[in-house]
Length: 183
Image (cartoon, rainbow, N blue to C red; front, side, top):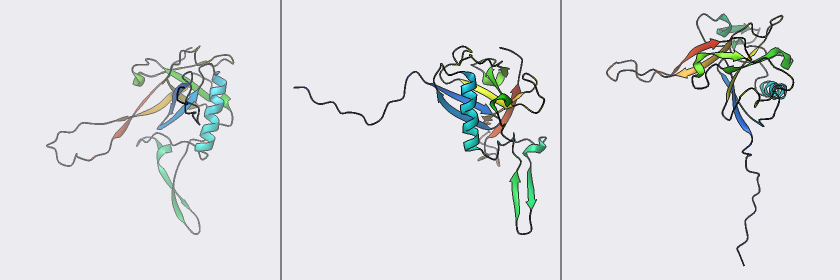
């Protein structure tokens, strides 16, 4: 008689689901979705995830020329609290634009904005396992294709071993943005 098989108490992950990385400024949102999911369904999942994780809004890109990223001080009668300005989350998925990389092998090359149709799926726009998408929020009166997708990528600079003062510096982030009308 053959030995009894041990029954698993959990379901293994499905090989048919896609792991997606959705990027905006310094944020990366990881989602696991079926490849047949429509883009409006993906946007709904993204917005609910953002509302749950970042109810106060997203952090802007850190740069000296970007006043939105500078900290401000809120004064009240009892406390002084430094606060960071945030990018507010949209109320609807209609105010979110998605983009695919111009070159999937060089993500810093820029982005092509997707024109979203109700029946478009991840498969139909060419998104594969481990795919990276950029997203941005549309401002009031702003149409799709008018803005840029701001995505920050970490970069590490190599320093000479002989230089003093350069050791132990933290990685800086470089900003790459781009957007073209497309798909």
